[in-house]
Image 1 (cartoon, rainbow, N blue to C red):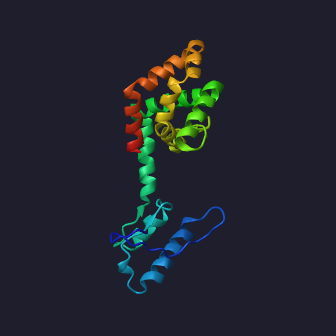
Image 2: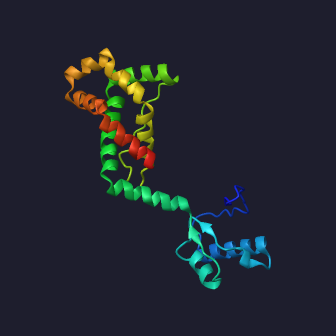
Image 3: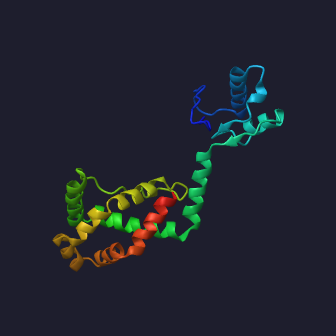
Length: 200
């Protein structure tokens, strides 16, 4: 737990194999409180946990009325991001545009070589842009966020690719190359990308 004064307290980790019953979790939590507080259990004002909020934490609250138990903030933020991804048009636009761009850069051999060349010049490594697996669910924005970070972090490299002769050749052959170029030259694309990145 991180305390308001900037210090951290770590008490115990309990390792289990497989499913854990909420009653067992409740017992472990209560035993830990007793270990820490002794006879002054009222000093424990609550538990922060990312599991067992439906039963174990509620039971402890019902038995000890001074406690206020809450689920981990990470879970709350994660749920909020999932809602953003489902409900905000910017998230959908950014996801679709980045998928189109990353698929194009990673899968078109001339563009891939060009991108890797400039990325190596700029950053000293030539890795491709991360792309979520086809099976990623809407409930997990993590893989999409990694892709957004890569695209945003490679903005200069992508602009250099647009100016390269190999891109101009692909532009003549591939209609999608024109769409990609138009998208990358549009400030709205970059602004929306930064908005989603900053919000997450």
